[in-house]
Image (cartoon, rainbow, N blue to C red; front, top):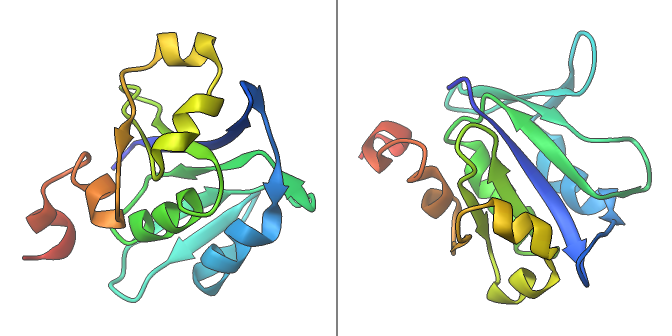
Length: 138
């Protein structure tokens, strides 16, 4: 996939930060330093993608280039722990893991995006990219 997605944290209509360790602890088992910046993520099924995550102790989000089916469960895991929204760059598809997150998103962003979908798993997120059969071989 040539897509990219961004996960951005918001509270009270403002960009907010969360401990970097929340995301890093989830991605680290699959991460290797990339040649220039960020982290290459490699999964047991052979799929790969690229993570952009700042090195600061507190971050406001992260990005994934070329998301693969294996990364969606990890993204969901972060979404379930922080008040963040995931946005796909190509079409604006967006999702949250908790309806309460919607209250913290700034009005200007809500007006610019389609209505965010409430997801309950990584496969929920992945189903918006390709069919579940393509992602998970069912």
